[in-house]
Image (spheres, rainbow, N blue to C red):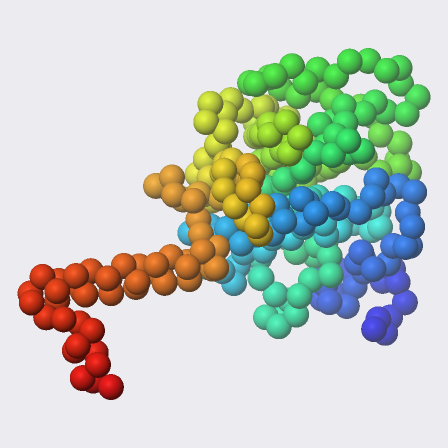
Length: 285
């Protein structure tokens, strides 16, 4: 499958991402650094986010989103990566060379960082997702995640070893400088949004559990509804009018319902005019 030996030496200008490492398939089957595979909620929630991520300012061919994909962020340490539960990028080709799907997202080759990252909290990853882990060798001290509107001082402010990857929060906030970092817990149904303001994230107040991202022309919020046969609160995108963006399946169902409603209205008008539509249809057969 891979004709070249990896890792491939970096070059300037960089080679095609299709030709270079890293990809998530280069990891061993069991990695002690990984907290575990995603559960079913992670899969379905990420799918709903992808199906409704339709920024109006960008053509579909320039919008990319992924879930549980390796995100490589440091050309000096080509194997360092984070694996967000979901992230969205705008202004990049949807496909490599207009034909091929990605095996990973390598920021120094793409030239565009993700615009928004979503982490779905789980017991094994909650502290790191919220930047609450302390640097090795430092005493345990309470994090300063003090609530809405407060700048977040956390692991991102700690000094990292040059030979050890930084924590997730620091990568998103200080290295990639991702404008929006979204955290959602399905256990408490709490949505938290951190927006990059200057050098650090600040938590936004969410009176209606929604956040509008004017740069994208999209908003993200909590929607109560059924997806994949499961009724619960889900994260999904909405448009400038506050309408939830429909998946293709929902659009098809809506069109079918509208067509059925128009037919019923026509049949009713025919009956009111003294025409029996059943007799008319029988004559056409």
